Image 1 (cartoon, rainbow, N blue to C red):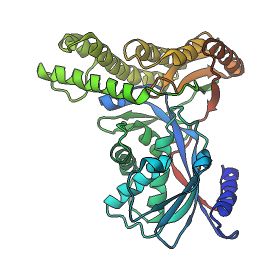
Image 2 (image 1 turned 90 degrees about the vertical axis):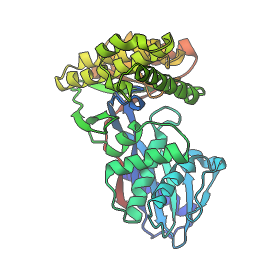
Image 3 (image 1 turned 180 degrees about the horizontal axis):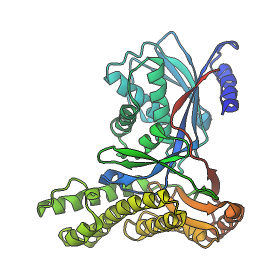
Image 4 (image 1 turned 90 degrees about the horizontal axis):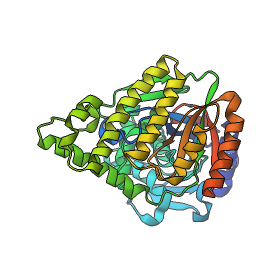
Length: 396
């Protein structure tokens, strides 16, 4: 990590014509993967994500004026963006910088005096478009930077909420809070059981002993993901409205047990809405049981629940698609794979699997080969380590 930051400091000094002996400040914000509990966050249910050891880095040098110059090694072709702290507005042509800009704007609306600017170089090793939350990673990174630079007193949960608001309001992306929470609150070797309704959370040790978490990127572009996500969300909200009309006093599907859902599902009008609601309720229960199994050190049972999660996402929520299904089905066929499922919004992105250590090498080789033969796409694999949340790395 230190090697990466020192390299970025040298690059930033050349890029922004900073004096060679000047000190720069370094920060890091992870990506995240959700182990189980998909499309439950906006349904007021439980999710079970963890922060990853890879993510987004930033190095910066403070300026005396109110100009921010931003550059990303991931989008070199777009060059340096110049942003005035006195006039932050959403602008489509500002591309990726709208995510950090939105966070600065949210702090300003709280009355934070952003009295000086900075030159900042970003670099992320989260695969773009993989569904491991590069947008939330850069949001939390920017929030940590603002909090540090301008000496803002704000606790972590408030910072997480501010970043979600930035994505919802400034960038007009209707996301839940899971991504920001996992990234801002991450803890090494622990996942977070988060109640997305109350924001109550518990750290759960992830002790896999002789197994590893393997993330596989389908490399399928998720062209329909946003519109389909909004459709699924609307279906769940409509299912709640149907239940409320019949006197059911709930705000979210996550408040129902599976038994209560079975008793009341006929009140939801239309088979499609019933299927969407069934997934939300069943996945919520599955997530709670999965954490119990993990606490009991029953990794095989946890893996089986991951498989069940994917089947529900495929059949009831219908957010998987050919590529994700092909990757998961290839994983299920491999000896040593304890469980595999899609993770993220769906329609592309990544799968997450738990694989016995002695089988990991063959798993990657065999699953990659089967997937490419079936889809024509080349999957990328990452053996994931669970890392800490967003933080300052120091001065360099």
